[in-house]
Length: 192
Image (cartoon, rainbow, N blue to C red; front, side, top):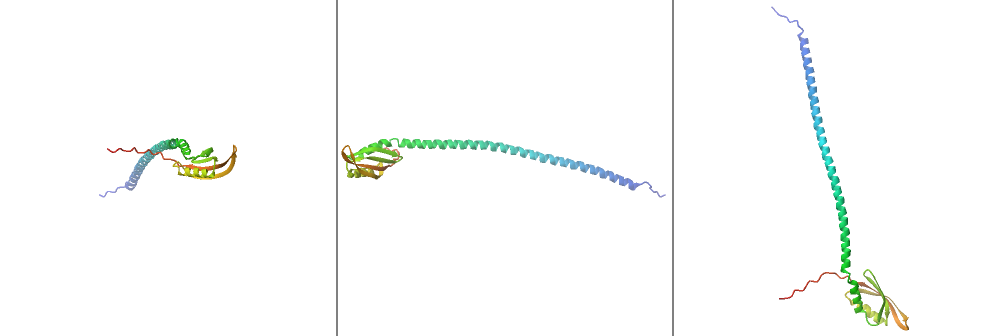
């Protein structure tokens, strides 16, 4: 005998496929949600780690900026101290200059010359005084030029004047001090 199946087997297969589809759709949705959540978590973790690195770098940059400012202040203080040191060294090197100048002037002034004023402005010296003759003024200028401390003597003015009943020549001379270097001389070594 022939058996005929009258049950709606196509509908049951469709129903089973639909159930499989919904189950697979649910599983795929759950899997997609899990993958999205994991990706979101990983990306957020990386962003948080990068933000921490950025904050660390900002703190370090701020501390380095403070150190740079301190270094600049220290350099300014150092430069100021070095400038003061140079001024003190210059003063120290030239502190005996006035004594040497007066000694040199005493040596170089010929008889018959009398100084009225002596004004120093930097290395330039203005001398004014009286002389018994113009020849003595010329001798004074030559002596000043030959001096190791003075150079560049220039006659500014000379004129005849009567002082205390005597006829004298008033003069004005400018000269320049040559700055001496303060290199310490090497001690002479004796022969044995």
